[in-house]
Amino acid sequence: MKLRFLIIFLFVFFAIFSIPSLSESVGVSPVRINLGEVERGSTKLVNFYVISPSEKTLLVKLEPERSSLDSIGKYLITNFSEEDISPWIKIINNPVELRPANETLKTTGGLIRGQREISFLIEIPNNSESGYHAINIKPVPLESPETTAPVGGRVVAVVSVKVLFDIIGNALRRGIILDTETGNYVGDRLEINNYFQNTGTVTISATGTQKIYDKGGNLKEVLFLGKKYIKPKEIKVFKGFLPTTGLSLGDYDAYTVIDYTTGKAEKSSIITLTTPPPTALAVKAEEGLFIPLLIIIIIVIFVVSVIIYRRT
Image (cartoon, rainbow, N blue to C red; front, side, top):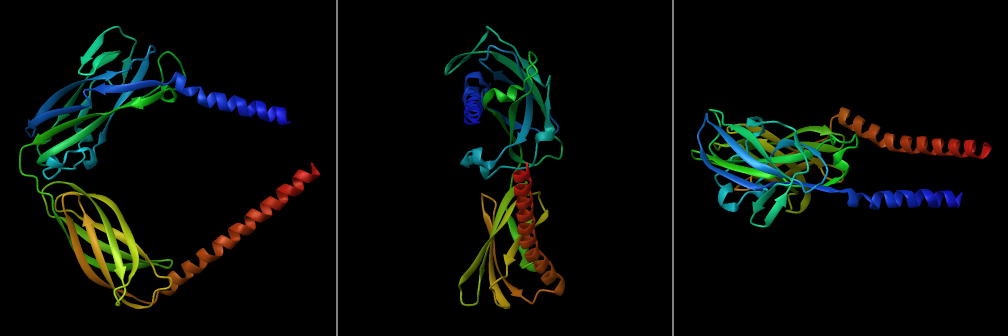
C-alpha cells in the first residue's frame, strides 16, 4: 500500500515539475503604440508583431481588454478618459497561427525569431469622449493546430500590447457626493447608500471608503464601498454595510471619500441607527440557526461514513 502511494506521489511530482520544460512564450512588439491625436469618426489601421521563439505551431487569439490607470503615465491621467473602447477594435484574421519561421525581427534588444505581423482597426465613434484613451491587446493561446492538447498548458509568458491615442478636446475629470442616507437592514448590517455624480466630461473609475464615528469622535467602523465606472453626468450608488452588533441606537458621523485617482470627493454626514424591523431580526435569527444546523449535518455524514467503512 505504501509503495503504491509512493509511486503515485512520484508520478504527480515529476509530472508537475516537468511542465516548465514544455513551456513556450508568446509576446508582442512593440509593447506600446502611441497613435497621437485622432479625430472622431475616423478609422485607424494599427500594425504590430506577435512573437514566439517556439519551434512548434501555436494558435493565438487576440483579445482587446480595458486598460487601467495604473499603467498610464502620470502626465496623461489628468486628461484621460476611462470609457470602454474594446468595442471599437476590429482585429483582422483572428485567431492567428504562429508557425516556426526563419525570418527575424530587428529590435533595440536584438533579433527575434518567429514573428507574425498583425493588423487591426480602431473605429472612432462620432460621440466618443475627449482625452487620452488606451486599450490592451492580449494574445490568448488556444489549441495547437498540430495537436489536440491545449497550448495554454505550455504557454507561460504572455505580454500585451498597449495602444494609446488622444481624441481632440478637453477632458475634465471631477465628481461630487450628492448625498448619504441609510437604507434597509440586511441581517444585522445597516445599508448605507452614497450617491456620487460624475460632473466631468469623461468616464472615470472611482473607489469609495467610509468611516463611522460615534458622537465622542471614536472610530467605530471603516467600510469599503467598492469600485465603479461612472459616465459623464451619471449617478452611481456606492453601498456600504455597517455591522450594528455592539452599537448603540442613535446618531453617528459618517465621513465618506470617493477617490477617482486625479481627485477625490469628500462628504461628512449624520446617519441614525434605529431599531431593526421585525423582518430583519427574523433574517438574523435564521442565519444564526443555519451554522449549527450545518455542523450537525457534517457530523452525521462523518459518523455514517465511519460506520460504513468499519462494516466493509
